[in-house]
Image 1 (cartoon, rainbow, N blue to C red):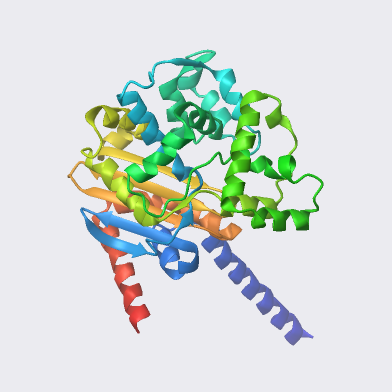
Image 2: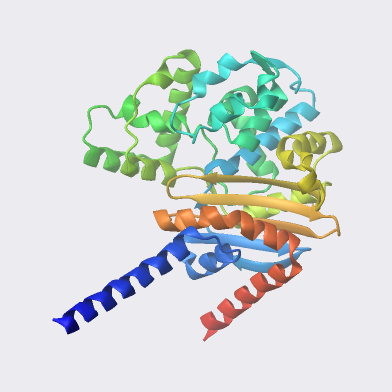
Length: 368
């Protein structure tokens, strides 16, 4: 009996140690986790990190991956170019109510409401300058602002930017929030199993056309957005998988352009800096960087980020990583680790060397 009790206690202790180890893995950030995970999970990852034109790490850089909200950088560029050419006035006031036509509650992590309730937005009252709508799209990742800007700027103009910027692996941009209504609008009274099949079977052209039709309905009817949506995990996965996609190399090239401060015209660059580099208003950021800009995105399955920076010592860094098909614990760990990872690579030369060494070690293992 005593022997059984001791064995039982040992088993419980081992389970507790294992659980503790799993908790340590799951709930504590690691500053090199992003790099290690990308290299160890190539089926889920695309990444490139460059310092002063030297590649520190890269993986699957030409692989097309869904972007989530990182694609909003393209819309910001079109906005900046139209502002620079006098096509729109960044100071023009827009009624906040207009934006609500494209606001769908519980689909954006409360991003739009966080922007609408922020001090910099509330100070304008019922009308908000165009420039602030664009900043809300980037800084807060408001989907409502994004779809409103698609309408104002013109989706054709936005997609023409893909050609102008020479982004070779980028798929067309379309209204991603509108896509959530495809089932309700065009595939009514379909069982969940059949619904997933039908959604997957839609051609990309038909899928995009449905989103454009729905976008128009949202524009014309303020009540449209209020309908109840079935957003179970299976439907969200289809939606996530069919988001606009691009390669890490595409967005690395874009980060280079933004980091150089010479690719765009002076007027365009001034607007871009104002929209994208919102963190530069903080002294804690200005202490380390000449400039810093980034945009990330996520769904239940995706985490993406594109970042560029020049530090006070003149070092230029571009970081792009796209992850897809993440398990919940992987996504949680990534969320906790990504900021520490980026900060360490940008500020700590030893971390940059470490990331490069992780990459070289991984290459050696692959060769063997």
